Image (tube, rainbow, N blue to C red; front, side, top):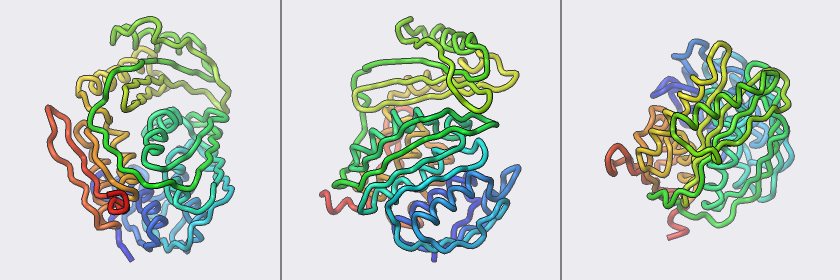
Length: 346
């Protein structure tokens, strides 16, 4: 039994989700205390509770403390079973964070699985569907983890109601991920969608973004309206290099001008391009678990976030493996991960 301090480091829900993934993948029971203790609303919110219930269902786990607002949880996994699963958050909480919790354990099962997830698909503080589909899943494929995702309906805060469907295949032979250079720039694209809002908002966002970074007109995709349960808007930027694709998302908010959404997103893109690192800070955080549970490897990224450093601590607690972060060049760092299956691929 491992005991986890849920208030350590950045103290967010990622500590719980990573612990659930690692517990399912290793068969190790754990107890987590002080869940999100430093947040304005401590304890389990709907999206965290959905992740717990999803993990318990696929892993036939015994769980204590799984209720809204709970600040302590016990989790004892059984055997992960492939199958067809449907999980609804009941709010605009992120479907992609729930997926993040169960994807790797299901990939380690002996048969394909299908998931239908309902809730938010483009939520602040969480990976967007576009990020998962275009940036994260292709890198998992390189590591021998195969999954396909489809966006059936957008879901924005506060209405939610988005639908994501995912097919997870059994893992192939584990392969290390080595990602130290971007390679040549292949393409750049900026696009925006709206729902239950004027279409000109999308056009203003993409135009302002392109003007700020001096991107050519042919990098701008015309704005479009999408179906969703309630109003929403997001700006998505795709930067594709030879060895890696990065996705940046700006979220519209009531009272926030479209030009401000574009400006904030442009700052993030400019920082990434200036760093010359192939892996952005959020993608770096996402890669740690599959690398640690697989054949390991190394990648160059920007300065690690508190989120990333906390994730490293949780992974090391479960696996006893080493994740080293060392200075590379300029403001970039090299992250080296000793994978659980690295000896098999040596």
